[in-house]
Image 1 (cartoon, rainbow, N blue to C red):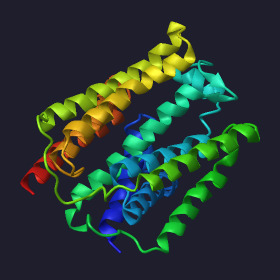
Image 2: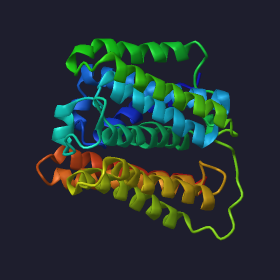
Image 3: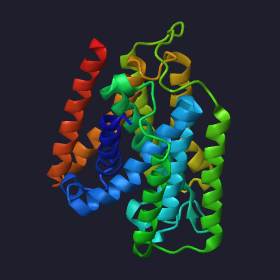
Length: 312
């Protein structure tokens, strides 16, 4: 068992999913009960996605789909923010795109966030930290059911803290999660951490790919929280918020190398995470200085990681 990347992922993923999203203060994350809860949810979820992607040899697209399935589990079954009218009002989207007790806009937004940040970015960052463990499983097979059980424990422990939607929408969300897992299995591409890859012809430099990732992430985020007030039909609005994400993904697939863990991959992760670093800095100006400190530490870590990968 590769205990170093496992421990790192159990800690990095909660930080990425909770602190960078501004949902939780870095200081609150250090409270033992909170840390245990988030490690069981985020950490075990990211670890499960990484190990399944590795053992099924799915590649980055498969890891993304597994991350989306994790997003469904957290936001539809654990927190149940998909269905929470109060949360939707607090987030500023209200009843926009509300269908069968589900805020479709928030459902797609939260799923995309967890797939990109809580799972993929966390897994890739930890893999860069421990390159010697990239080509082997990090856990023994028996630990996967343990990780799944830890995630289910969080669901039952926190069940009464959130809204209780009707069974129908819950079952529909479960079906969506299952479809993501099935899609990951069918993707069946080579392993996400192949050792090398050839550059695509005419590709831009990694810095430009990082800038593209930043712009696409920012565009999606802005559209999610501005379209509800325009009165635009919700189906068109939700589709519009996904255009930057799909366009960015296709562009990266077209121009990046075939090695997700090369300089191009790091640039893309830096671009995505960089947006949330900027967001934390801006929110910190309103008085949440702990978020500013967390953002600065994250930025410093990304700079250090880029130098480390560049020397490898």
